[in-house]
Length: 189
Image (cartoon, rainbow, N blue to C red; front, side, top):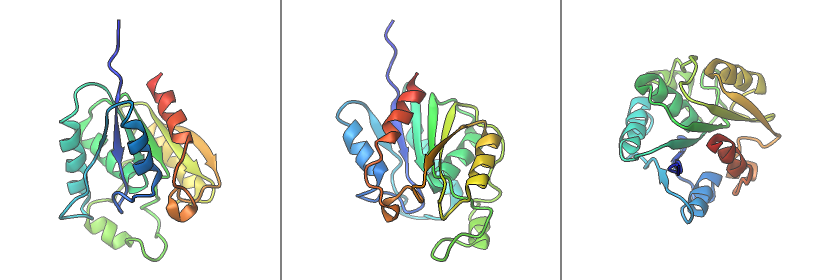
């Protein structure tokens, strides 16, 4: 019996697609060997959580067969909100560097008031209805490790400590992130 390989669904964070980001590079690399779909950037309501959730749902509705979501940063929070609303079972999800939206973020990021006004808060703290891996950095400026550990427990996710990798983005020195492919393979098993 042959099983249909999972479609990889890329869910970027609040800054959408960045050319040198590991998700963008992963999408280009995997597209040659499997189906990879990316949630498109929003043209309007860019900071509205509900608009982001609906973009995920719209994109998922175009995919037949199993899905492995690969979310980064704010994309993790989008997916958690999506899961609470839609309860669709995924084959799995890689949740990389989730930010702590319930604690003030550094300058240049949305404030708690802005996040709340745009529907991000409260962040769901209920178990996800699918297998998930949370890739946690020990020195992420957007979330203390202890907060990420707590999120992983609440979501029923397996925590993967990926070391001192900052926010796992180009500003932290990451273009390619080969470990993402290993974590996706874990979710495929």
